[in-house]
Length: 457
Image 1 (cartoon, helix red, strand yellow):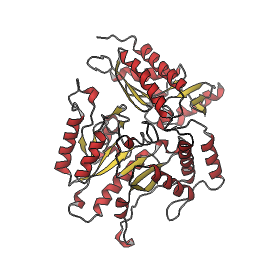
Image 2 (cartoon, one colour; image 1 turned 180 degrees about the vertical axis):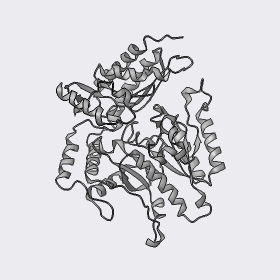
Image 3 (cartoon, one colour; image 1 turned 120 degrees about the vertical axis):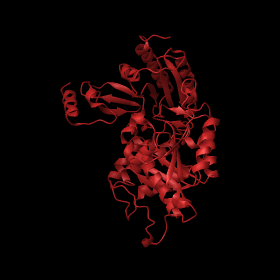
Image 4 (cartoon, one colour; image 1 turned 90 degrees about the vertical axis):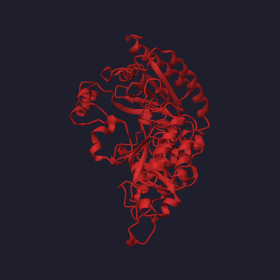
């Protein structure tokens, strides 16, 4: 008790938490995590909570996974960090080989960084510089990007520029560069929100109109393949990603696939692009790359892109970008162990029955009076709460219904986080069928408890 109170006091005195209104945080009694085991988090009082969001979408095989623990300890006994500026290190080389082997076809070069935002930033800069150095007709005019409505690609200025969610980017717009915005197919919203076209065909048509008119100005298109994460786990209709790839090829525009959230099995395949056999020109990876252990990211690209950066020293074609911990040996060792577990335990192959079970259980949410939509791809779930199910009228922001549901689940030993009033479930891939049943039940009961007092028209 005394230890927890001390940590709480220090936290509120010195820490500034991300995506958190600190005025409210200072009034709360927080859960302080001290240890973890398997799929569970354990607080300073010894209470266990199922890690229902994989510690912000990063944990893959569970906490304290022996193989990853051992790999990190073994690497510490050798060296913990050495720069990649003018030097190499064994783990970064071995990991690059493994990533190229499992990535979509054509991606042969790996550039490391620290997190998802930087992985995206690197892809944007590479795409921009690629066209500047092509020395072909109109290549110098390709200085713009095209992204999609509802996109979230990170919190650096470049990644925010290709994002759209106002709560994240509105305050910084004077500092951001302009981007062409294409419609993402938010089909479930169509009856009430005419801002979004009503189907995949309409979205693709609008996308091609942009490319046809501005393709000589556009360096690249960036997309979250199959699932838009921060927008509320929006699943694109079948064939949408494939059409985006086709049109990018048609108009000679590079395609950046931001798989920071969807990579490493979250959608049921190792990479979301695999669902439609789409090879991007850039693949941005982070989050699950080390199994939830250490900050590491990778931007993969093609030999075609790479060759545009080759030249004499005095030509300054070098990609002048880097991070102090680029290719950090500890992070790379953890990532290698993580990928070895995928193969050894046949993680992807074992996901299908879990996904089928989850899909069946989610059907029950559709009958709840304040559930407006249920979205799922693999082990990614978004349950959208609304005031009026018929019109999809949302709750007022200040009511914080999604937040209240997540607070309620904690009483039953489940940690999840909302995206506004969309309840997100994204468990570790190591979740068992029994745990799937249990956490779905907890979420269902918690929604009923919180929304039971609201009238239904």
